Length: 167
Image (cartoon, rainbow, N blue to C red; front, side, top):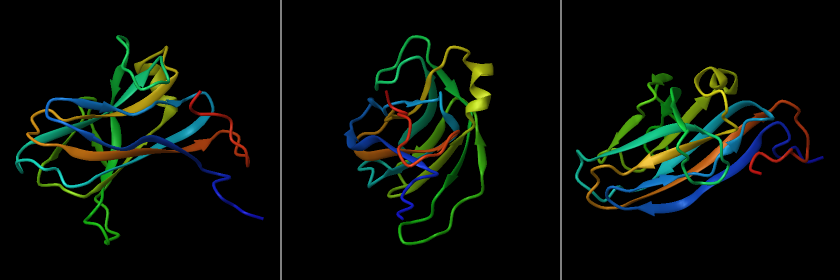
C-alpha cells in the first residue's frame, strides 16, 4: 500500500513566480478548518539584485482563500528555519519572527525557508480568519527573483483522500 502523504497534506500555493522591484507576491491561502499544524516550505533562486536589497517574507491570516489580500488580513508572528546552500542538509536554529516579517537580503540566493504556524494561536490574533498564506514583498529589490511556496498541513483527521485545504 502506498503511504504517499496520508499523514501530511501537501498543498502547492505558489508556482515558481518572478516578482519585480517594489511588488509583492501572495500565495494562495490554506484553510485552517481541518489543520492541526501548518508548515510552509518556501524557496527562491538567484535574486538578481544588489546584495543589500531586502525581500520581506510575512505570514498573513485572511478571511479569503484566494491569492488576494483583504482589508482585514493580519500579519502573524511565526517560527522559521533557514536552509544552508543547495546540496547541504544544515538548517539554522528555530527562530521566532515578529509579525513584521523576515528580511531576506540579496546576498541570500538559492535558499529554502521552513515556516511553522500553529493554527491554535491564530484566533487570538485574528478571530475571523479562515486561512493563512505567505507573502513575498520585493521591497527595494532592483531586479527580479523567482520564488515558490508549498504548504505542509498536518490534518486533524488524516486520511488517504484529504479534506480540501484550498476551497
